Image (cartoon, rainbow, N blue to C red; front, top):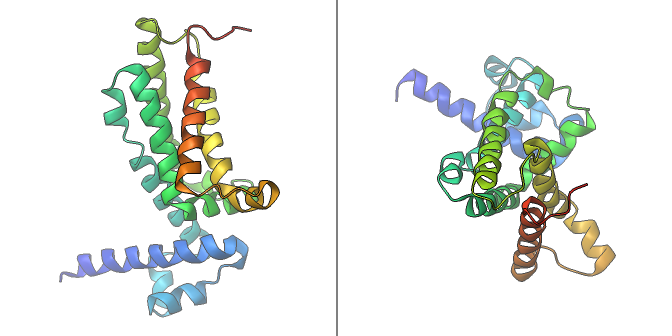
Length: 211
């Protein structure tokens, strides 16, 4: 194996084990020594790839965001009719969070630190600009064919549909205690996804009450 391939594989292995460490223990609780041990690398070699704990955490966040965004399939969404496109966006977002709950844990610790690590990333914003454009295009086409009302803010809409999925999954344990419901049961998840889809489509509908 060529040296560049070995370096790439080593970097990916570090990121994989770092993601598990940061997701389980948060930024403050995670230890570089523990990550190096998981990777079977010396701490010095780990720092050859990532210069600091903060730099490693930023790289982990970037990788997690890239993985999450890849699941939202902008291309497929853009080539569907507006109602189906909105349904797909909601489903892709819910499924992406459901299948990568370490991402939620990473977001929680990033928010605990008021986003200071994300502000140092040069790529996070660029990952979301295409998403906003996709949502805007869905809304534009929906309004053009008369199924969505005009002038819906694409950022507000995405914040609404993503937070409904995020809160459901991130709060599953406390909500289970509070309501005695297993939110992760397959039937319960399907009910919630249908509920969120109905809420968002009703809001977008031309029949929605305007304030």
